[in-house]
Amino acid sequence: MRHLLILMMILIPGWGYSQSSQFSAAFKSLVNGEPILYAKVTNSNGESLLTNVDGLVTIFYEPESEITISHLVYDTLRITPSEFEGREDLVFYLQPRTYDLREVKFSILGDRSLFDRKFVSNNLGKSDEEKVREKLRIIEMKKELIGLDRSAQGGVVLGSPITYLYDRFSKSGRERREYAMLLAKDKQRKENGKKFDNFVVSTLTSFKDEELARFKIFCSFHPSFIEMVDELTLYYEILRCRTEFIEKEY
Image (cartoon, rainbow, N blue to C red; front, side, top):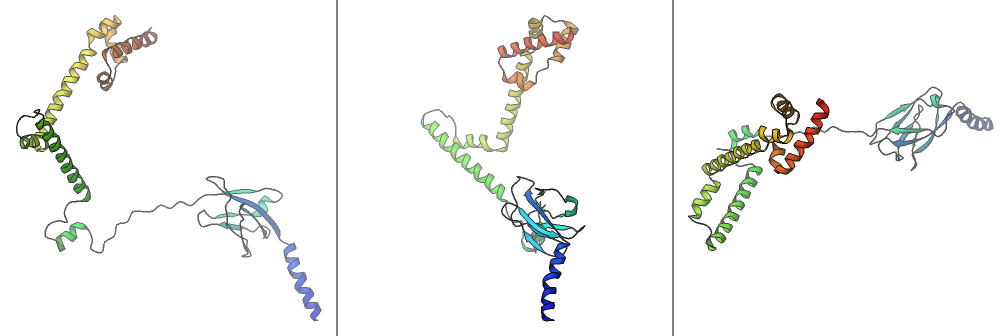
């Protein structure tokens, strides 16, 4: 009887495995094609094996059953090995997991405005960005003073340094500078108009009236280009554009 039990213990597992098939495959990353190490491959019986350094694994499976491939940093994959029977050198690519992390702000005191009303009389002061800008402004003023002092020693600067700094950093001073910049831009626009007016274009192209109007629409340079290039370069571009215009129109 004892020998019979031992014999049954040997034969029954062997018969069970004879009903199972082996599944062999390699698992690689979809991003770079590198083998995936330690991917967990589990069959329907709960048996699990890990892939080796080459991403390879061999595991038994039951007919029509699924196996599950899971990994910490890759999406879980489920496949039915019986669908791949007879195929060799199987390779499966796993998709890396992506995590969308939401920005969360948390405070036991609530919003800053609520905190201000409850705990402080005014506000919590200037933000870090405002402090940095103020510090840079002070540094700029310091550099201006040093430069002004050196210029004054050389007899270049006339007037009071305080007046100079007021004109440089005060609100009214900024407004005057902005107004001067607008005047300069307006003057530049007028000069650009002279560089590309009807007289210049007609002289270079020999176009008149309607033909001239169509050409200026066809060859309309951006104002920044007219401002940037010199007259010789602009005239060359007008002549080049004239050739394209003639090819298109005639």
